[in-house]
Length: 195
Ligand SMILES: CC(C)(COP(=O)(O)OP(=O)(O)OC[C@H]1O[C@@H](n2cnc3c(N)ncnc32)[C@H](O)[C@@H]1OP(=O)(O)O)[C@@H](O)C(=O)NCCC(=O)NCCS
Image (tube, rainbow, N blue to C red; front, side, top):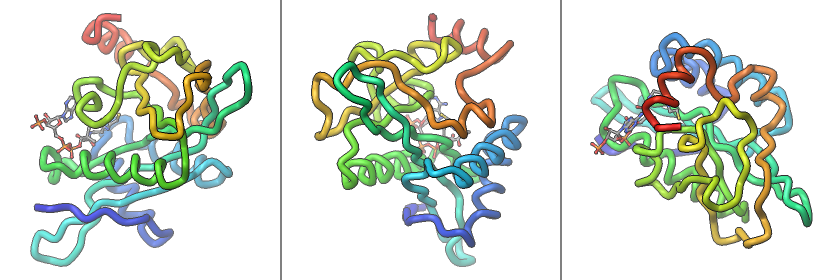
């Protein structure tokens, strides 16, 4: 099952929502909210879908969005990309669809001359896909509710050493309250990742 990745269109939105509602389970409605808030803002930089053909024609089984954030560096504010949400339909997970979407998202950022792509996620998944702990490169997290190990960055060719500082998320992520984790989920992830 080789996925093909292409730019998302407005017509894909229902299928994209269906992927996230299933992939994120209880968190699905919040993910659909942040997609709406991002699209209503000026922040979306790229939206990609992954399709597979399981015999009945191309089906959307994954989606990733890149939005514009900033690194508040001493010398200047630097525009960067924030990767998320990323979701793959459970029926297609574990077959490289997520990896293909992350690779295509990084290609999109490189092609736009973006110096770095940030995300919140499990380092066990993203370390093999170009991401490193952002703290080790001098970046500060946008919220204390993001465990340090989950705060990751893929520095790209346009990144220069002075481009460090606090990551500022686009407002849509705050409006939808999808920055970091809360409650038992935060406690469980802190316990698992060791911070
Ligand atoms: C996380 C997600 C996007 C991965 O997509 P996918 O298409 O299943 O991933 P891939 O097939 O490219 O990669 C699968 C590999 O990643 C591993 N993996 C999947 N999810 C993982 C996770 N949360 N943590 C660590 N490893 C993970 C699998 O074990 C597998 O390992 P292997 O290559 O050694 O066999 C998908 O499982 C998903 O949508 N999950 C629910 C929503 C979510 O958590 N999104 C990410 C938010 S940061």
